[in-house]
Image 1 (tube, rainbow, N blue to C red):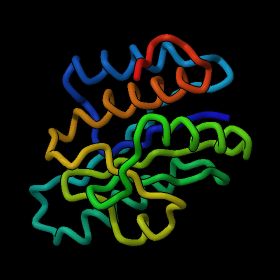
Image 2: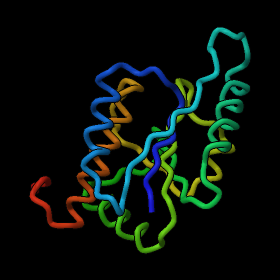
Image 3: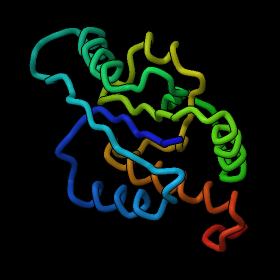
Length: 156
């Protein structure tokens, strides 16, 4: 089983890549965390927002494995505590399918992509910089994994 972060956008600041890479490196071999970047639709094209999100959705669909659990990151998604995310992680591992966490572009995700997801997750009720999602999600997944292993990284 793999954990995939499929994110719209590339050429992130170095701190974004460093943060994501740090927690991806810490994940165990049996649960690798991989980033797949897809190109954002140029916002200067004059296209309607819906058309830009649809183009990004098509790029996302093209890189998703044929059989994977889709979890979209959305501001209206469900809140999860670290303990709840750890329980979900264990359940996903039991199912054995790859899990793809899908991060939209500046305008979010196309409704069709949201509808195809098994779950919707919100990282925070705060408005955060888009780039912060990658390292924040990577850390949350690493922390959840440590909870499942009674590792001392997470403390209540």
